[in-house]
Picture (spheres, rainbow, N blue to C red):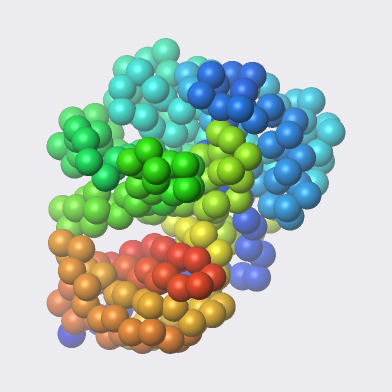
Length: 294
């Protein structure tokens, strides 16, 4: 039996911030219909704590929006789009999209969060991201966008898109790469707003604290279902949710290790290299970060 587990949920306080790291505006992304001001206003009125603006190969200036909407943390970034897309977001971003992608990852520093975007964008179609392509970069991002709200809308699904990226996540985790999972609404249009977000446990309400916590995996992805608590005692896990749901503990190869319908769940790890938890119910979905056997 495993002794203790390595995981990002140790000593988490009560300051959880809600937001999406992936969003676009019509001023700088031709694929978007939402003006920047409309997006920021919607997020502030909806009670979001932070928002990342990540237009395609462009850094959207946020100084004016920061003055107009001081109650929301606005994060600067871009979506690298000259090959399979990858997100860079932080308090301040440089035009790393001018570099080859592997070099951009190497140069990003500790103040930028990076993640593979919508790794499996369509139900059927050509391969997009793969473990081989990620390995060829020569430098690993912080994680993978494991739920994309833009692709999960009624319009997106009608066009053959699908929002989940958990397959590549499990493939990478099984291969020994400790990558975190993130959920974003990838806002392009009004239909996308608030479809997915991250809850991030921070030390303080600042841009740097949000990025620092997200890069450390001190967060989880959700479309509405919330975490009420997680306790780890040795190799034993106890998870409590905000509403009943079908919960699954998932291990190497994406295998379902245990499944139940409830609002609380428990599992004791044995020889698994990692275990992660996800659930789906009337309130939405939730994706917790993996826990690793030491």
